[in-house]
Image (tube, rainbow, N blue to C red; front, side, top):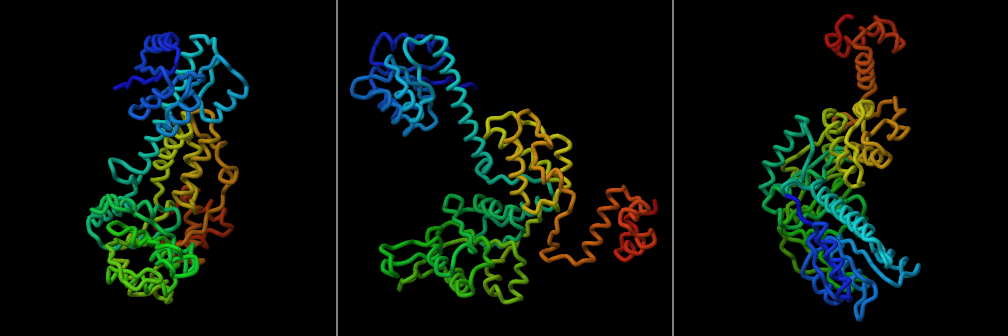
Amino acid sequence: MMITPRILIVDDEKIALQNLEHIMKKEGYDVAGAQSGAGAIKMLESEQFDVVLTDLKMEKVDGMQVLKKCHEIHPDTEVILITGFATLDSAVKAMKEGAYYYIAKPFRLDEVRKVVKEALEKVSLKMENRQLRELVETYQGKVRIITQDPKLLKLLEMALQIAPTDCSVMISGESGTGKELFTKYIHFNSKRAQRPLLAINCGTFTNELLANELFGHEKGAYTGADSVKKGLIEMSSGGTLFLDEVTEMAPSMQVKLLRVIQEKELMRVGGTEPINVDVRFIAATNKNIADAVKNGHFRNDLYFRLNVVGLHIPPLAERKSDIPLLSYYFLKKYSAIMGKDVKELSQEVLEILTNYEFPGNVRELENIIERGVALTNGNSLQSANLSEDLRDLTIRTFRKKEGRIPTLDEHEESYIQWVLNEVSGNKTLAAQVLGIDRVSLWRKLRKNKADDEFPES
């Protein structure tokens, strides 16, 4: 259902006000009038308008004051100033204050109609962009994770199953895979959804600063502590605290965190009385947590407290089917945000993206699409809109395998399989590309038990 645009016309000359009201009503707008700046501000405090059309020179409260107040109350409303005393200085000042347009009297009616129509289009676009930004994060009150990959869909099922419980969760995965997004998904599907979700990156603070951020401090705890400060644990009580890069936490801090989880209470820095807290902890790391425990970098008991349920998010390179889906999602998002009409990805772009290894994962893909949309003038994103490095990239990215660095044999096996796929399984041609004879290729495939995967050709 179309909503009729609302326009407020402000002029202290009654005839001028009535004339503009008549003109705008004929255009089909819902029009209201105010014969003073003070009256306009009073209406703005209780009603929402899409466009305000106001005279500049008025007694007591002028058009500039109406403009400032309107933008304080309704930032999305566009204000058009009309004046019979037009000067360059006043025009510049009006535009600096955020006026959409500055019309000098005597004006042409066609000019007023055109400016109002364009202002309404801008208001509509701002509303659409705001709605889209809200849609990016949530869908019917839930965080939206875009995927069609079977492994990720299974993880989402598990996350949804554990969300209503209060168990701690450990999320692992490479940077940019969406660990924080999974945290939001769990939180907003839990009984804590209406309570705070706070986050901290444990690798960005020294031990002392991290203690202050997590536990807060009492007044006078140290020089400069002029007042009581609540820490993030206390502030997120009743809700969820996301501990990003938790393996970067110093051993002494791990001990303090373990006590909070076990006892459900904390002590502020410089405090003497324990404070009860009710917090769900979700931790994340891009490291191999099992190796960190084994090497003594992370406490075994804290690991078991946090890893009640473990979720490992696979890298984007291991879920190729998500690349086109995510690409179109980001295309739609940034096309709307930038006010463009980019609707398609060329086949060449899709091939480049699908063959790319994405060391930066989903975050990198989003940046690539955002840049592409910014540089696109048409309705289709072409390879020319991608960075030159990405277009020319022919090398493969070295990627960890199951949280560890692959061996040379594993890299060789992966490269041989890639070459065979590129030449459609032709072993003679593959051997020539690899610079070895056909017998050597057969031995390598036999060693890797891949000879059945590529039959004789």
